[in-house]
Length: 147
Image 1 (cartoon, one colour):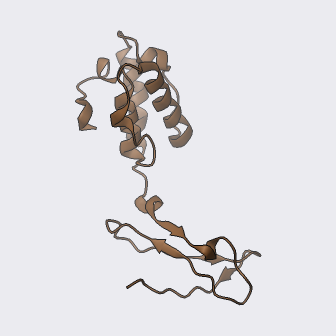
Image 2 (tube, one colour):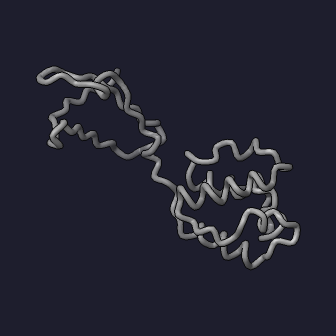
């Protein structure tokens, strides 16, 4: 999160924006607007970052937002809280694969259902498509690549 010029474990985290940036660095689907957060809304920013990290990433709330935004935030408390992020791995980019089309909404027995799968070009791994019928059994799927 170089945009926040973090140099320590105290005042650099006070406005909550860097925490939201850290959450976004590990989970790009979360806190995408961290760069546009108002630095003056410290409590709201810190609350959002701490709550999101807990709910979506399993990071324990070892510090309260009110403590994080305090001008004399406890350095060791911040270090302990932030150390939890070291054990997290960035999210698998496959969450950016998108499936859409009428065939995903309804299907009629013994007829073809059309749907599309889009994969961003920066994702180099193959995507496995599995179609499951209403009774839980796998349904044969013919793949046709777009031109």
